[in-house]
Length: 110
Length: 112
Image (cartoon, rainbow over all chains, first blue to last red; front, top):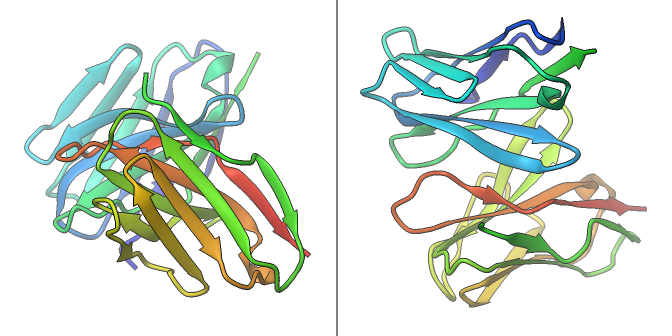
């Protein structure tokens, strides 16, 4: 399977703490995208990092990419209750197909 | 803002019924996609379309067909619904040359 694997599968932290989610993949990629899904806003694109980039920031989000290890991480700083959601690491392979895993369930406790 | 709408949020059908799921996007996107999402499996691509009247099979097309008669509308058809097609169905669109996808709210289909 070329499915990406997110780690951990579930994460529960206190509001204000940082949350780190990791993923690994098996194929060569054009880019890697992170999406968020919650019941309120559905599935939403967060950030895209290209294969020649190593780090990217967007607001409280920081994404890293290590193509030699075929891995990526998403850091959410100063978490808020509204960050409670499932997060998907989605590599885009050389055929421009998105490879979806099962996601990480993040719960932010007040 | 890109808007992708799906015809129903919840749908209950009986085994053997023909089911139509409609998706409409208002941003003149070339590419449209249908996925299903099941617990523990992530999203799986059913069909996609790069242009009007064009369609390509995704990873799990069996039991499904699609129609794209107009650029803004992409329909998923279950010819004869079965219980194993109970799932969340998500539609997405993207402009040509852009890799990020814009998703609709999803249709939760239950087949009894």
